[in-house]
Length: 78
Image (cartoon, rainbow, N blue to C red; front, side, top):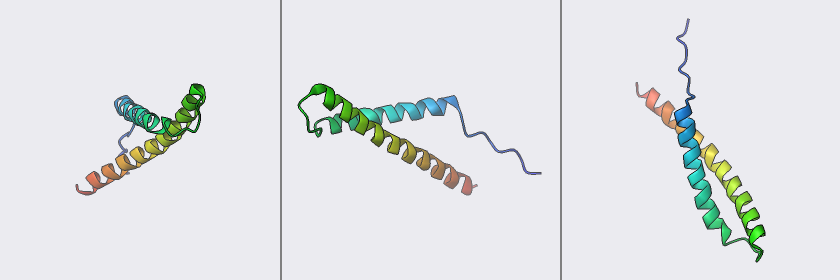
């Protein structure tokens, strides 16, 4: 019988991932805000936030894939 697999989930890694993603959201929002074609501050905040949210979602997925590939390569060396 195979040995039980190690659980990859921990609260610490979740907090780190959320912190990194929140920082990415802030950077994306700061970059995208000036490109919203509106003079209304509420619309700039809305569309800047929605765009930064989508970009942060893609960043989250890429971050998770990077972690999985790194773990696989690290385990393959053993």
